[in-house]
Image (cartoon, rainbow, N blue to C red; front, side, top):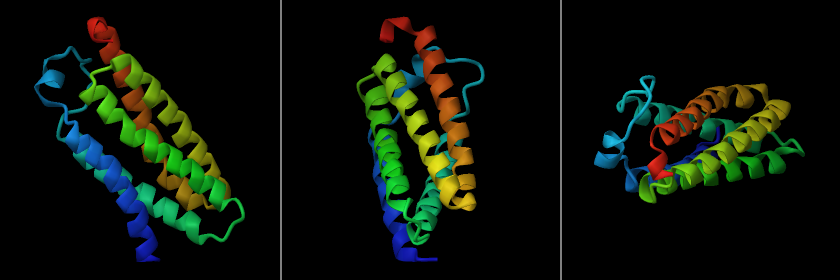
Length: 154
């Protein structure tokens, strides 16, 4: 394991996580109408820490693979982490739920494309993205459900 490479990708994840810290849910989010299946607040930092570790490990494996497709796969990884970093400022900072739904939908596509690209190079790296696609699927559905319940905040 190349720890330097792993920590490079983890730093990129840390930058994305920082936007979540800078634009935290706060009282505004607590006050809006949410579906009954909304995950509890404590789960979000646990889930994201786990996901960022998996994403970093997966990217490191691809970067070390020597496969000619690795640069393109890592390009997809870069797109998804950028979209990941964008969602919190749009949803929590600007409170633009419809725009955030577009961002998270694009994130879902980017995660799916990255996962497929990773699977084609290294099946373990692809498997490490399965929890991420599941979480982003839930986040997309949650964003849509919150938008439906709070149309005045579109």
